[in-house]
Image (cartoon, rainbow, N blue to C red):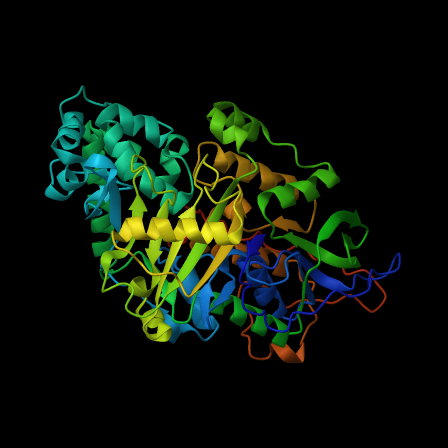
Length: 568
């Protein structure tokens, strides 16, 4: 859910609340699939099912579609309210964009890269480019010049001690923060790792799960005997894999000309073309199993469907599953809670992040003085923002659209820290953002011509110790009932690169149950799937019977840094 002083762009013709349409007892459900949640995951499921003849109803509690990928209208510009890029890894998001006719709109960001804001003598600040050869900020060569620039000689020498300390014969650490502090010292943790952890994962590095955020690092440590050696090993392995795949060098993230929200608009438009119903301002209050599927009760009436997809924030999915009596964590989930740090368990309901966007008049910022943005070191006191994106420097298309205006976005709240703007009104939050922007750029910026504030409540970061087990427990709770699935960041992890393929797998699983209307005329433009038999509809007045299908393809997922929140 979001709170914003400048509402997002209008969703494509989403229907208003309507009267109840629940079926009478014993009748066939009114819909094949109800999707609770109109974010990117829910809309992807709706698009994939409606395009193949399914009668789909999407219910979104907010007054707009898109969730963290929604639009933000500000000073005549259509900006992204949340995610402003997607990870290239896997190719699923780009593939979806191409299907939606947005292939030519996929763009790379400015390669200038991000900077770090560091403390300086006398309470001042200094900014330096992020070191190059790092893994989540951990340097592979502690005495490299760009590392010395960030840490100073004392910090760099302390980090280099990692190579002189007793050999790490087996890499078995769970949490990233303690490992970095033990091997390289607090300055590496505070100045390099913490800013990246906050900017990428909205998490405290003390809680980050190494296996999730840095796959292969423990194996690299075992092979080389040191943390920096392990980082070098992982970087070399990735470079070799890219070379073997003949991958062209380029950015790890991409965007869409006009904004990521264009994917939301296109998904909604296509789904409605294929007769899906999209309703905003409708909150799902409860779900119940029936003899023919599911009954979904909302604050605007009740609806029935053969299958149900929960595409909601974690706390909302758990609330609905609690009503079914199936949301108790598995043994693995309980074990994860036991081994997770106290801070992670205390913040199981998630974190709150606030984004403040400022639009400055033409000429306010000359060039790209801080690259595409800045990550703020943990020991850089006096600046309350955790990160800042210079959006018009990062995206050439936005610079053109802004017609000389400069747009920056500051992020507040990360890990266990509540946003510094949390208790402030919008005007006060904008004033703090202006002060922080002036400190980061090191110049007297003028008053902005417009500002907007968006608040996101996110689930527990998928990157912390124990999160994978929690996600699996949530999937198991849904799997206790037929034709009930959970999608979205609550189970797939943060970032479009993880959410989109997971949602498409869920849609495939439902398609195998064959609820859809055969030969629906609005699906003629969609090729029949080779691995899914044509859908079968029960005779009118009878409950649809789902013939058993082949099990959905088991696709092993892997979490990695997505940078999709876009800070810096």
